[in-house]
Image 1 (tube, rainbow, N blue to C red):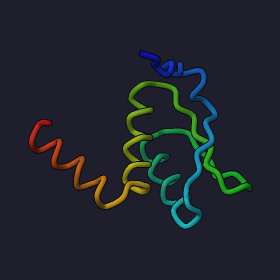
Image 2: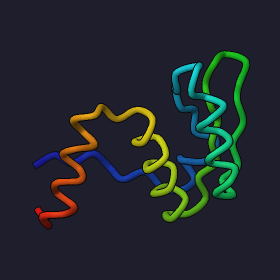
Image 3: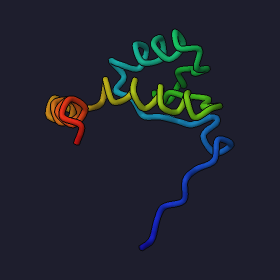
Image 4: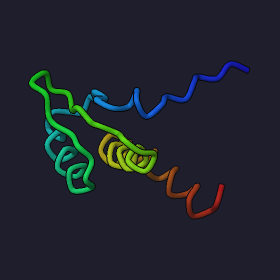
Length: 84
């Protein structure tokens, strides 16, 4: 079985994330509230510095909130509630 290598924290620093322009500032503000360094770039991307596993989980959670579809949110909640 081929597995994609797990990125190291060094490769996650200065990570560029594509976020819809209308949500970019909201995502940036939320990440900054969580003390995760980030900034909006002129090309429309969001530059994020992930320096710990905890920060990586928080970034995933924030992005899932904005980028996940309604069905993805429902599925996630059902798996969480039912323990599957």
